[in-house]
Image 1 (cartoon, rainbow, N blue to C red):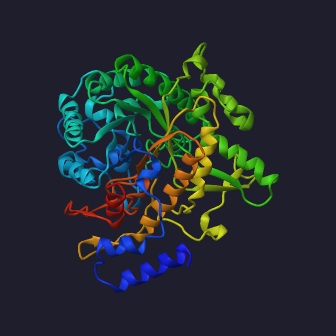
Image 2 (cartoon, protein in one colour; image 1 turned 135 degrees about the vertical axis):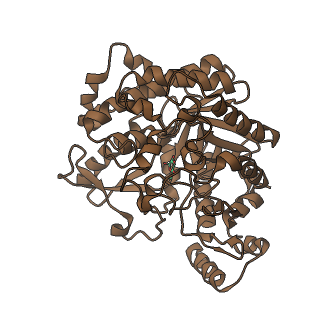
Image 3 (tube, rainbow, N blue to C red; image 1 turned 180 degrees about the horizontal axis):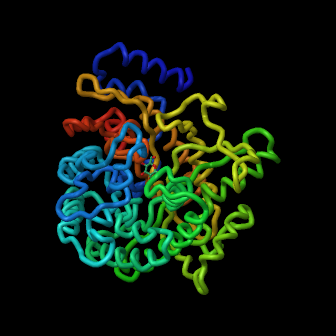
Length: 476
Ligand code: BGC
């Protein structure tokens, strides 16, 4: 019986049954013979989160507004009019959530700081209550035997800085440096693993090219300067960490997806190469000293206008690790009508993909193997952590349980592919699930649920899903 058939049977039986004991479920999914030990004794297991998506407490204890506070309150920007004002209220529930994390046998908590919580105006006056909050999270992790891994920036720019142009304004290099100095000086004695940025391509393209995310700006005149200043901050932030926390392990994270041509290898292949630049190459190559990949995507030539003397050298940094964040693959078809990139993604439904998540992303486990290989092939990438991977499915709570077998299956099959790459000799040192809690999924609002733990957003009740219980067993 193949896995999909097995999964279908499990789903059918779970719909009819009441609560299935975890043990029985563990037996049912025995087809996966992989063990935690296969990944080695030093492999790090954890979860990844982001400040705006979980914290809530958006305007208390001195926090300033971020671009997401503004954007979510504009009409029509977010599905169902949702916002992250409260979300999982991690600000008040962090002790319970870290205890849950510990109970899942996870040893890493990756989280980001909210810039406007510690610097309400982006620069200048420091909000001590914000600093105290992150100390409390870090201390709670350390007391529970969990390593705190801090991301400096996961998309929530202070609104005060956006009012001056945000990532489009070159002054952001100064603003960001001040913020990175603040975090590293305050937390560097306790936090030894740092990531500068979360997915620079996502926040520059979604926020400054197509306007689907905050701050809702569009066009290459916004995108190109935002890209250059972001690439600069990516390296500058790392230099600041190195200076203030000499014993830190320093990385930065990239969203990335294996790309394939739709049908015609040659025609669609060219379009695929252009997408590959945008999705996978745009930010890692300047960091590695290779410059911007302009040859494969000529519209990027316009970036020259924003590059000052000496900048290209400044984009380089010798990162200790690269964070790979992967969810799906992209199949690309030529389309001359799409400006500049002249190609488009073929939606999973239009190519009859068999398994599709709530995000309309295809479940394609081999994609993570292929993209790891692509990134590991760069000279200068010496160590990889999978800093995000996970899936949203329509979860239902029944009898105090969430039988998210599809997610269990997703994790097992993606992990098998991570292991495959590792066994081929690639230095993959850890894996962090996206994510601990159901949370605010940006412009999609609260509907897509990615958590290992279900959150009832009315009552703040947490219910560990079957996938969380699976990790608990697996990591025992
Ligand atoms: C982001 C997360 C996001 C997740 C799922 C990643 O691109 O870092 O913030 O929630 O994907 O969409």
